[in-house]
Image (cartoon, rainbow, N blue to C red; front, side, top):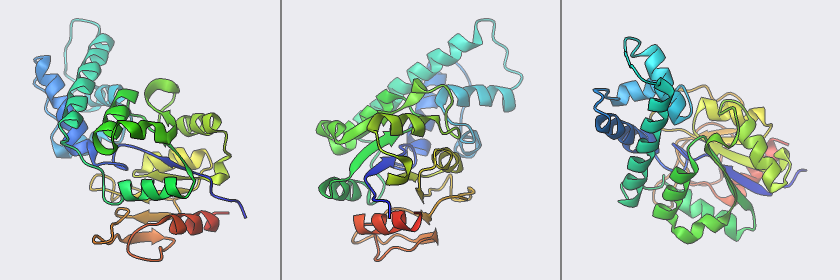
Amino acid sequence: MTELKAIIFDVDGTLAETERDGHRIAFNRAFSDADLDWNWDEALYGKLLAVTGGKERIRYFLSNFHTDFDYDGDIELLIVSLHANKTKHYVSLLESHAITLRPGVERLINEVRKAGLRISIATTTTPANVTALVKSTLGEQALAWFDCIAAGDIVPAKKPAPDIFDYCLEKIGIPADECLVFEDSANGVLSSCGANIPTVVTSNNYTQDDDFSGAITVLDHLGEVDLPCQVISGQAIAGNYVTVDDLKRIHASAS
């Protein structure tokens, strides 16, 4: 039986509910700064989440939802500028502690570390966003807990391509079948499964209707002692919240 040696976390929607009250707000503030009358409400943003990556999401918006937008300058420079300013607004939201970790995340990370398992991050969001989230929720010292933070444009193809997970595996030097991934979306599952890594999903309001085919277990969140989680499909857990022992059993079921 293959031994579980490492946990790899996605970030947005997995570690924290960053999309609705973080990235969306930051995008709208960046649009306002640029005197653009664009407003991504919750419903529209849910549709835009079909595409991963901030710059890619702006392009998707222009080509599918705002096709009559007329711009005299270089549209790519505008997109890059908007995204850079959006990142500043997002980091500012994190620094004000406007965003917290999802239930069970901090508890499980501490248990994983105590058990001697290695942890990493693989995400399409920018390195600055990851750093700000980790520092604001777990403390600056927590950055050293992760063997690899694979983020942003470090690979040419973003999720659902497997590139970011392939990169992470190469950096930590652990085979795919000795790892377990936590994701929250269909694109994330396609990406992690494309890299042949067993995957657990914690869904959220934006992704609860996604197709999670390929995931071993789908949960609503990781759970706390006083906040039970629900197994939506797949392998069960022993109690009311996810533990390292559960992760080992779930991983073994994929071998």
